[in-house]
Amino acid sequence: MSLVHRRIFMSDKFNRFKEIVGEVSDIGHAASVLGWDQQVNMPPGGGEARGQQLATLSKIAQEKFTSDEMGQLLEDLQKDYTDPETDEGAILRVASRAYDKARRVPPEFVAEQAIAATKAFEAWVEAKGKSDFSIFQPFLEKNVELVKRYVAFFPPADHPYDVLLDDYEPGMKTAEVKEIFNNLRPKQVSLLKAISEAKQVRDDFLHKKYNEQKIWNFSEKIIAKFGYDFNRGRQDKAPHPFETTFSVNDVRITNRFEPGNPLATLFSAMHECGHALYELGVAQEYERT
Image (cartoon, rainbow, N blue to C red; front, top):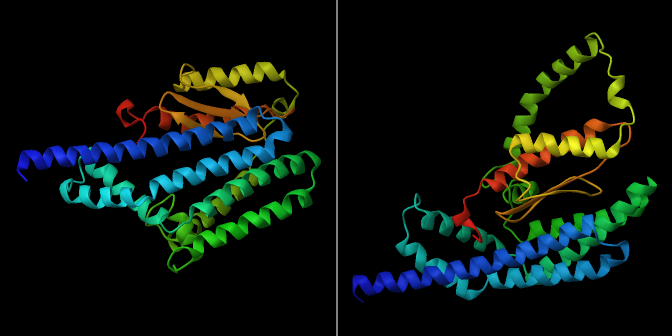
């Protein structure tokens, strides 16, 4: 095969690789829309069906991403795209790592986790409203059991949490996290002592019952000043604040209102806005990657 023909051949393979990655991304974002709707709009009776819908999408995405075709594409492409500083080299490196981890987890397990998480959320909302942990406890225990099963899919680590931590901070170990917290603790204790011994300021104005809509509008003015683009996002009410991304042009946040605690709304808006600004800052050409 001539060099020109090989480049065309590998280009076709890379386009096929991007096609699969894009499809998996689309499925994941569709699942995110369903998850957002569950917490913002869905009636309580829709929980069981929503869990099954999320399970189906999760299973399809897992099967598509961990297919033999994807494995072969990654193996072939990494032989040609060897420069880690290029976009192609970077996406192949990240995708290969994700593929190796995902191949260890059966699609059926991913579906089971989706159903369990959905049921747990509905139970948590009910338990929170009634201040009754016993409602949520069995669902929490089920999800903890599933997490332990997930960890068991991987080779034994120094600490079970290493497997989970690696999903978010690749290569980091539990021992490192413990060291960070151990180093912080003396300073935190010292800071708390200084605060408790300081002259107390009057903060009763922070505990008054303010107009909910005015506080909500104020929170949106604050995040707009931060740079949050309401043409590419929105803020809705949910039982607990979160940020979710459907595309680089659709990044949403949720918030809540607590009577007598306006700072809860304001700080939550600012916190979630921070996540959103990161997502909104992703370049358009990386959509669906």
